[in-house]
Length: 124
Image 1 (cartoon, rainbow, N blue to C red):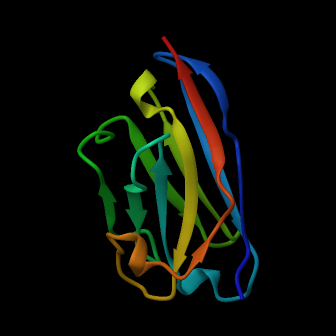
Image 2 (tube, helix red, strand yellow):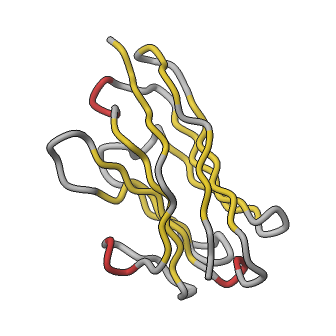
């Protein structure tokens, strides 16, 4: 089993930045691809960024491209999501997810483990 614990959410003004962290338990974190999803109230969960097991491949949703950066530190068993130029429409609960595969996952069904989520609220 893998446990994922997110941190770093909070309230920020539009145009500001936040960095989410996701700490993972387990010795096999290095072999996992990871993703960050978000779910706003009344909306479906959506993938915002994903990274392959070694960081060699990444994916970003069009809505966050150029503003968000996903990274993975295998030595620290941690994946990060740097969020810049935040907008009110970025307000959501953000979830970290792990995939027992090397390559990118693009849907929630592609992931095997989930964190509890971290709330991000962007005020206008």
